[in-house]
Length: 413
Image (cartoon, rainbow, N blue to C red; front, side):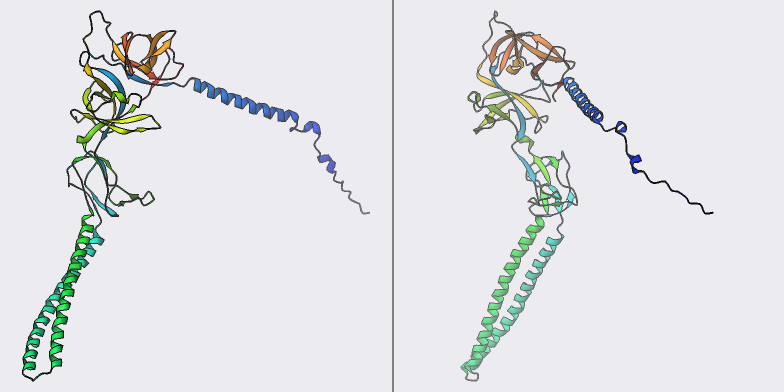
């Protein structure tokens, strides 16, 4: 007897997830929100801690010795050493560099060879112009031989015409031939002159492939290498150089400073100046004002002043930082025995007011040291310090507003 196999019906309702088993309910959303808020709080706290523990950067200045005799300081300023003669040497034509005969620091003389460009094309143009000239000169020689023969024929035709043997037409033909050859000779001479001009032009193009120094100086920048393309104008990309070298005339070094227009009336031509390079803080360089540029910078409210060194020195290099002190015309009067002794001079920005007392912050071993000082007279942008510090101390002139005694700081380079 056949048996019948019974298959169970598919119950799709059995696949339904009960509400109690769901994980994405309100509790899950609240947990996600809480995690995000907690993460944000941790990040903010970390940033605040890092910012609070960041070492502040301060700018310091060395307390200067007071002037004893000589002239008194009436104004201080800072600037840079700048040469009056600084030139970027470039080629007059576009070409490929085939030779460079200098390096940074090389001392060069006027007319000294610096670099060469590829001159193969311009030399071919020069040879072509010379060939045209030679061809025209050869044509002149040929025309002169023909002219000599034509003149003989003309004289013969004149004699025959006078004897009544030859017609006037033959005489005119001989005369015309002579005049034609003379014209051809003049044309050939003009062609020779044109060829000479093309030779000069081609020779100038060849000479332009040689770059020489325009004056005595020192190479401070090497701007091109062998194989690179150079051009007198920018090609609009980064693959073509516009210069070969930068040369500085060290004998033209001077100081350029910006003086606040409120104090420019204290500066005069030929005024005595004391300059101190940042690289040599113990070396005072006698200088004088060369000129005051007769215009002001409206954005910075400053006037540019150029100062010349009384005597140049090999240690003075372009773009060095330098501080200058403008001196008064009148010498300092000798102090009375009862007058207070000035220990040092400080910029006015280094002094802080604390309850009616003047204090400064010294930097020792990368930590601040609060120091009370007794002040004397003001000398322009500086103030006399009678006690509290000595010349040579490193004093903060720029720093955060909340500086504290013992605080670790970083000196701005």
